[in-house]
Length: 407
Image (cartoon, helix red, strand yellow):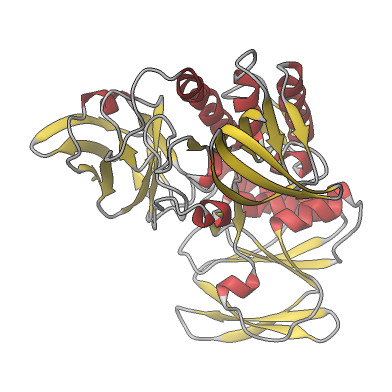
């Protein structure tokens, strides 16, 4: 029996577990063999700025969060996979499978912190041969930083998001040269300074409005065929490694098996400002809700959700919402997270995603004829979720739709 069972030992899950010190038995389950999530194999600096007020490498960040959770009294169950959840007289019965066998843990509160993943080649429907040497950034980082192996000598990076440049750095650490970065978008979506510094140091071309039409090779990749979508010209880039980056999707399989209300735009479950899903006692946090935000923003989700979990365990202050107000967005916004509002709850921030770059846009939040909030944001870039204040949640009344626009 556990008071809280957290599925996922990444930044969101570990931070939430650390927030629940003293409220009861907290168990964190993760299928990996070490806690920490993606930061564990991301060796560059930049982690911890928003939540820890410092800047450390990914592995150090992962260690700090895991140590804090354990020090707070949480039990970590690693190499363990949740295979089912069902109602129980004492709450929820969670089926767990690990090298030790199958077991059932009954819990009063279940928190889904399963994160997100990059879409692999198969999900992107890239045709061609099926050779070795085709990876995602996550598998590349594990191969290099955890297994201490090199992926090859010449790589093509598919995508031009911020994580794509991390892949270039990881490839260089392994002695593999990036010979091209390819994106079908009109420009990269990383930071301009980061793009300039990376291309100056690693000397690779950025091919925009360019699409991979075929992967070539038998036992091993020997090249990729690309087409320039402006001219229709095709050519082959010789390489022995292809890394598919970005194009994130929530790790939502468990949420779907639970029958939770899902947000088609984010591919994750719908939650309100207290991180409550459509099923009483089930919460969701982190990049399961907003793929793919930075690790420290996910950690802040865990910190904010702690209060809501404690309220649920104590039986206060209000019943589980049955009809929260839905949040809708107008193009060029792609989604908002949280995607529902329960009157009286207010998350620290609401994250938004756009489909095209915008500079100094104005964001307006309305419910009916009422303007709940309006303000400018410095910049909005596809693939980089940005925050607006969440205090307007407290002004929502009833279950009428909330609309967010950007201009």
